[in-house]
Image (spheres, rainbow, N blue to C red):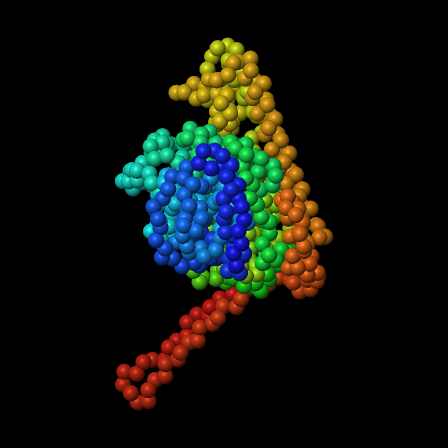
Length: 592
């Protein structure tokens, strides 16, 4: 069923113009509305018209009076295997194609990838996708190539002849999707190629990482807005699955978005059954084992630390579970092997992993997500839980909550966040050197600030990102007047102090979620700034889940090793050369 609705946007000359787009009611088959990140759609055979420049987006009309570019978008969507678009997807397309910035906050599995894949096929200049996730880039790149859609991937793993060929294709321009990382976008060679071709639209996937990672180990995120302005300030499309109001404000500020249209939907999907069990000690692994013996596979078990992943992986192997594991301290080859085995279609196995696993992973039939240890925030929890049930069928999202897990996250945050007192000391030492009109090297500055070289290097990266220092050869110079430097550095340290306070509040909200007495979905909607809506009817609160029997907490016996039957070869009567009777081998050790 179709209905029409007006969308206001900027016309070719900057005037506000109304575009009529045709909206479809939601279909029960969710996979048919996603981009090629879905593995369950078939390749459509739709011929595309020639791409048109952005400034013709609202002028060209088809014979029926519908904007020609929107008609082409529907043809492009069918080429991706998408038969119908969500209204939110169409709003994002309408905003991007009329030159407006848009912030898209839609749950995992909603088809955010279509919001940049479709424009890349109809606009006359490249669409640039910036993502922190190499797995996502590789997966989507392969699927788009299989559909014969123009796409180039450029990241640190593309080298030599392949890199030169990719840069040459980007320089040529035309209808093309350029997939890259924040660090690669900052390179001079890619900047030169995009400067020649131009950019029709810049999309930033997993945009919440700008707020969460930019201060820690992906500082290139903080420079994204500035870099895109250097490349011609194209229309911006920021996409994420979860973002509170403060995170949305961070995204808009760091990217320099211009009055973006915010397109959002509830972070909770109706097919997810949330449950929380407060548990501690040895009871946790017993409860987990009973859960995964009863729940349908495949599933993912998330742990907060690499040690917990290794311990749990070993325990489940002893219980003869079909299990894989994944964390950042494994060798890249081992991680990729484990991921590839788990992702194979039809395999019903279990992945035990840290939060390093899952971003950008497309496996629609995951039946459960269990958090063996509590995550650091509700944002992280919803992002990871949303990887279950992307095929629309019911899936379980279970949190095994122990209040002591907070100590783990506070220790991890202590090491990952910039400490304001260390930044104060470093700034004071640099100010003293500036007062003497001297430029220290790294060793001298570390000694003066009473910091390690590693800490000094990390803090200097923060000051360099803020434009307060420059590093040339072996000397460190401040780039602002000495009289202002220390004050600006203290202001920067104050912002990091605010971040540490916000980290504590996020852990508080997670505890409130674990102990809440209302529908889990209602709590999550309210936390993310959406309307509370009706109870979900699936979570443990709505179902009134009964108390577990005492046997639920009892130790689980290790399965018995099946004994091999030994055949005794009998001597033939009176026959020469008959085989002697086999002597039984040593008894196998008991699996106990």
